Image (tube, rainbow, N blue to C red; front, side):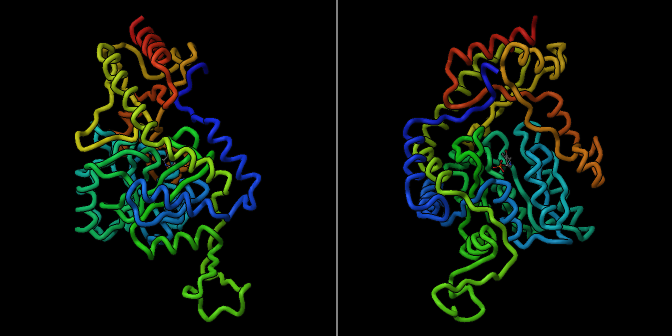
Length: 387
Ligand SMILES: *Cc1c(COP(=O)(O)O)cnc(C)c1O
């Protein structure tokens, strides 16, 4: 593809930081991981952070820390990457979905409330709800938080798309309306560590549990042990944990990238405003931005007006790929995946999500996309829709 849908930006400063780490004493479990955790926590306004090797790992240990287990339910949006739902299955819990709001394409708070009322009658309320900030635009967190208070569930934000974004003036990840927020540092996301993720929280108990689960369930803190340490070598395994650690090399890259986070998000906003204007005459719906929001703008998803253009999303997608424009589709509704079909979900279960999926195309959106490239994307899209 001459123009991909997303791409990392690696500078000489990033490279120098990684090389310096290679020459240092620690390749993993050194001083940079706590530095990175502190830096991200300070940036977004959270009290604590746990860096891990992916957002998927962060979602897993977050669910475990929130006490999710067999017999429990986790609810999320069907329009997300599979990891937002799989994390429940890792814990032996069950998954259900809440349909999206057709305007924001995020989990719909009204649909959530209706489903909670029904679940209350049937005695199967969820333990955890995972709002996913699709494309970087935060969900209606105030409404979800109010429902969490009323129905007694925990809130785990999947903010894989949203680092650097804001909701009601505060950074996503500050935890005003949730228990834990997860970020991803995969290369297509806003800043990268190659693979990597982080869980943010204001709860000291949750951060301790997640830190333990990240590294085998092993502690060296006397306060967390069943009896006094037997010597300076001593550690205890108190839980069944994992090796979900982020390396010092990855962290060096992340720390260097973090310096450019706000700049990257601002650039994404410039590009989005340009797309909004350039695409206005075409038979597509451009993304609606809620006035309370400053999106992280990981993705710029347009919806093809299939009636007005006489084209399917598939035809438009193929025409763009044939001319080197690497568009993508975010996402195939999770409940339609074969694995989830085997769990009993059926096409038609979440009609707004399925309708969105028929029309959605993610256009190229990344900080180093040039205006000339963007003009080319728009010109090719115009041909694909009208020629
Ligand atoms: C990318 C992504 C994940 C998984 O992130 P990894 O860091 O690749 O594990 C989870 N949820 C959403 C919404 C994502 O976009």
